[in-house]
Length: 513
Image: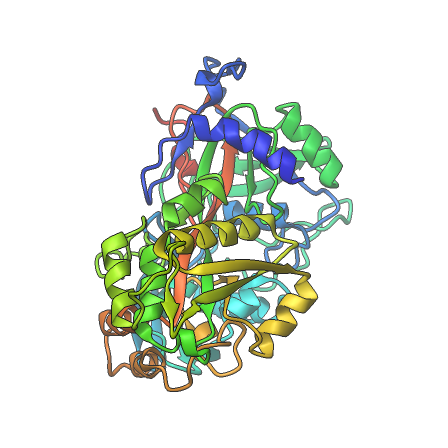
């Protein structure tokens, strides 16, 4: 698997032009032997997307990822997050969040059957989301209660304050009591939505047809034909034979698909980081933790460990997140001067003949724990080791099974570890700063970052106050945010935009040059 990833990804990297937070398209036509035979083909105005015919297109009951992704075409949400992870109103006219209270006013919008979208439809969809076994249940877990105050007003009460709760409102809305629709042959139909497309099944062909009355205006791609992909082998065949126009993967299996046309990075909220055991004497000083952070070359990790399908972290928050992109100050490349100053402040300035720091005659040594079953994180651990070696710290990568890895972290038996968490869309950091949470191990209970986070969540400190406390304390060390990959046909006259809300974010404009 890793060899396949390396062979494909190294070719891809040759033609990459990294531009930070934008959607970065890559075309293989400039790679020797990678001529793009369809690049000059005229776009027909029709797309072909994979789906699983045995599965539902109901966003809350669909079992397959590709069908859940397709559902964003059938169903609008209250808001949608753009490429800067900033909420853009879709069905919502306004959203006001104050303390535990959220009030949502709806626009005038219609479902595909011509009926109006009401607050009762929204609350019905919230109920379905909370009952779903998939992602929306967790996304709305902070919802304590909800109510339709009138036909165009939804009120939500939260369990805990969340200044960015609006970012969690990109869940699909469908017409209440349409979950069990069936056609004349008694076959299940998707619920009625208000989205860009409507479901159609004619003579055995299943397709999505553009709506003329969509709230967002004209939809330029008139038809999407759904191509059967009942299993992973069929999907792989569709990809390799160019039977489909687009394909998305979050690269969680570390395998880049054998796509012959255009590739584009797609943002994720998956943070890869160095967990730090602050109870270790060597790591108790915030200066030592900041020194390690300054020594690490994050851009090298992006390129070597993730083959450029990642964004170097500029802080704890995603570098594209609109609320924090201008207030984070972590360098993406090694800062030798800053690292040396922090090591000195931590009491490490004397080195032996091999260039390693020594304290009381002993070489300063650290172990980097990593899950041996994740090759990208293995490569990241090696990159961190090499950065620390350059700075003067002797580090050893200790790779263990996932079971031992988890056991050692939860028992505190580590110096540093390479971890990954998928953060929610509001970038709530409770996974780090709540006692017993999955990524909280090693963080001092008396950490000033943890105290400031509590204030921030309570509304008595700003997000910039919290970031300043974090950067001064560095209880964990952010490395990169992983990216997904959108593969698409070279014949599209407009470049797709893929966001964490919607991988087909601008599909309504694909056919506009």
